[in-house]
Length: 115
Image 1: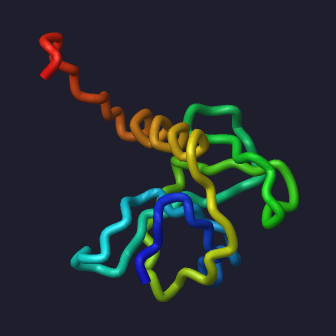
Image 2: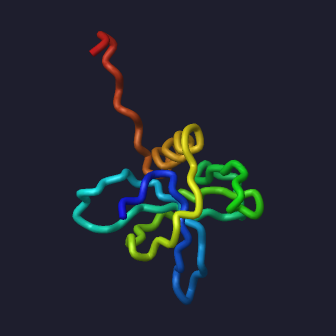
């Protein structure tokens, strides 16, 4: 299994958690040394912060939902149940921007000479 960015899975987070929808945000890598994906929990609780990205309506979302980039977790591939849905395009662009904010990553400067 090689989960792709934007795939949404159900994950049982154990006794203290619950079964939650998780959005894969890590790159697809069939040759990764570990069967792990970095995932963001999907929540209906919005705090209005730059760590959250509102998700467009999808049949698998019962109400207005958000990707919580402050709650990133490494999930073992065998724990991923699904996929149940997917997000592409502008949504994933906004998620990448929120990840950059979360880790205080700034894009590299572009050369001015066109290289």
